[in-house]
Image 1 (cartoon, rainbow over the protein chains, first blue to last red):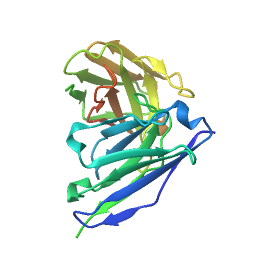
Image 2 (cartoon, chains in turn blue, cyan):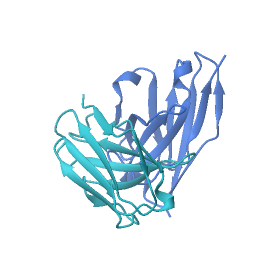
Image 3 (cartoon, rainbow over the protein chains, first blue to last red):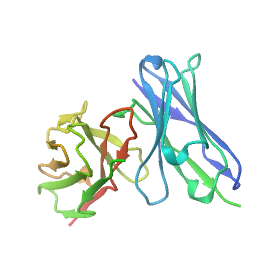
Image 4 (cartoon, chains in turn green, brown):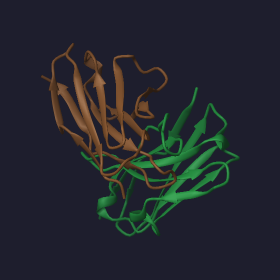
Length: 116
Length: 109
């Protein structure tokens, strides 16, 4: 069965960086993209971008350009999302999901808290 | 940039009743529209894609319709497990940016 398992919760100080991992299993990793979506406490879903697990091509949300980097390691079927220069409004649950435009399987979410 | 709106923000429905949720795009997205369900503390779950195609394992009481700028998600007879927040998402002109609507919360009347 398809599974996406994310890394655990993180607490970071403003200005720091965080790197969240997403390990895929149950399907051919390079046949799908991985999208990242975040959700601030009590808020809606915000699309962050996607990465092709086939060739590493990326497409980032404009508001995150320059602060976010998405990568994959095909040897371990793992996707990564790194967010730099963290601010308090980056506090959110970060989800990875299979697919580019339509996301049929999701990770369990990783809470990233940014606090001094 | 395409902006998605949803109405109402909250919909109070009794179990067994029909629920109709609306989603509007600021410009045409053709049929490139998906619906997701999210329960508290859980990841979103794909319900509908292509405006009207149910995802694998989604019960037939969920149906989607519309094209262009106006879309509807209908739950024909609400079950207890259907009380949740529902988000629409456009993915027109991929790889252009994807946008979610703000969500509609369906709660118990």
